[in-house]
Length: 288
Image (tube, rainbow, N blue to C red; front, side, top):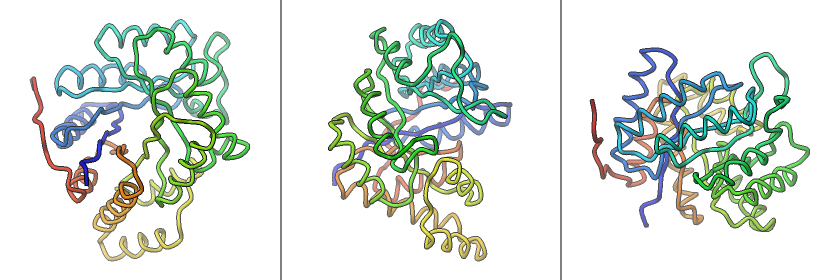
């Protein structure tokens, strides 16, 4: 089997301890030679400055291609495009363009009066600069705010047509969930790559809460397996086995790129990659 492409998502540190954890994550995973790594934005744009610092630091010290998340939340068009210009000036050419979650305490997203009203508007503006490779979010199960999954697919088509080069999906637990979604995308005329998002479950309680918030269904057999594994002290072993099996099924189904949500805890992701035969290929560069 051809070595699959891989990529990793990190989130920006909020304190010194978090900075050490992020760097440890980069240090552990960089040798696996990812296509890119991405750094998230907090809800409501709360980590805008931290994201910028993390993106530029990883770019300068690791030799990795870094994609910065950029959202429409709580900023004018001019402010958002100014952030993009700062990334371009720093040599960052990849952006994950998202509408973004509502600020904490708000029930739903509300566009800034002078801001981008949607991810499509943001993508159009970023694409018009000609400075970036753009990736966007996709939902293999219905987004909680969407009328239907068909509406989700139609919106993804608009994002691709607006200038996005690829999409990265929300996490899911069964390969068939992704394959059904991929088939719908092909039928809708979407020809850009759809990259499956993989969440090695480091914390079952947290993953369950996140799944409920994002509309991700949890198969009963997996929920029961984790309950048993937590009782027996084997949760990490189960998480590695399930994520490896999911990735293997995806690769057998024609997927050639896997995107891992690391939560800045690299070991499970590293173990899954090694189980898939993805071995270290590079070393970090310019480490201070």
